[in-house]
Image (cartoon, rainbow, N blue to C red; front, side, top):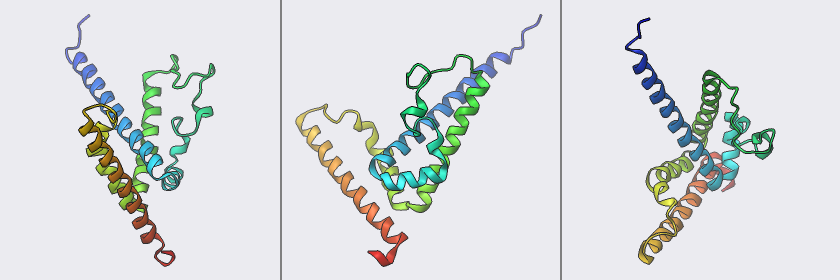
Length: 164
């Protein structure tokens, strides 16, 4: 029996594609989660349009609990193809949600873009660092809150200019 020399490469390529899929999915999940935090009403609307509420992570705890009550339970009977289909479906719903957010709430989306690029890495270390670093991070957080509020007001004015 001869071994196919490309089989190993295909396996590596498959793992790379899986990693890319997981990284994109993680980015989209984080983006939608932060949108829900910063702009709850707008995010809910975009999620409803994008059908992201049907994905287990955002449908609520009851939908994401397994039979024994554990969150993020892994079904060991799932084939890799089934898992991939489920991940791609979730990614499509989240992508559509982000697209709807960009379309209907461009200013809010711009603030989220900036946050995801600039501030997300520092978010996890909010209480770490010297007192000066903590003060700078707190100041940046307050600026971010102002940016979020300003973007919300702009989007609201653009959607319904007569009520402002």
